[in-house]
Image (cartoon, rainbow, N blue to C red; front, side, top):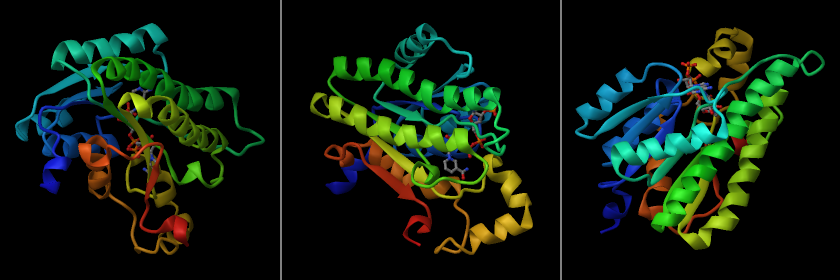
Length: 254
Ligand code: NAP
């Protein structure tokens, strides 16, 4: 039956940036669908872990800072998930940061910090997970893109560059790994009410200019992304490769 194709029973997932915000939402959605979940963050993931366990699933917390993590340590993260949960079927590359500063002043630190977490870590974690998934005959990688994978944004050149690159990387990996049973796709969330967007929601003019432009008439919430992440993590998406799915209240169609 079709709903069985959306089940993640017996699967294991690794979600980065799972302590709060959208990453916490992805972790809970995957757990609701039946997956055991490894929660990676530089912050304490115990709250997310407790919620995953309350859903009857196993959770393991991995404390790691993806801005500091060398490639060998990233390989070690995947090995740790396999050791703790038995296998790795699903990787959600969600951890991300944003630095708002005009292009003429945008510092090298801001540029490098954003590219390291939002792009380098996505590639090297995908590489490590991809090796594991190819060896076991399949897997699902979901990258988190953005409206700024399509548009330029305001005051965020490093973030826009990284998110455009995430879209390209998603397609490049999909081309290599589709025939090997590994699906690589992305979700492009619209404007979501999380800590990441708190500064622009606190600016009344910016908030109004954004919310009036969203056809759905409201900012998104972590739960709005649950269906897309379960779809892309499940057998229901086995023939979907290199897609970047906007979940944006219609923002891009406007
Ligand atoms: P958020 O509320 O700021 O949460 C990000 C999470 O990632 C936090 O738990 C954070 O830990 C963790 N993290 C950040 N840097 C890390 C690092 N170096 N190593 C390990 N963990 C790290 O952000 P969000 O709004 O949920 O966004 C999640 C993803 O969605 C990002 O990739 C973002 O670009 C993307 N996105 C967000 C929106 C939006 O409107 N919110 C829209 C499109 C795309 P700390 O608590 O220690 O900071």
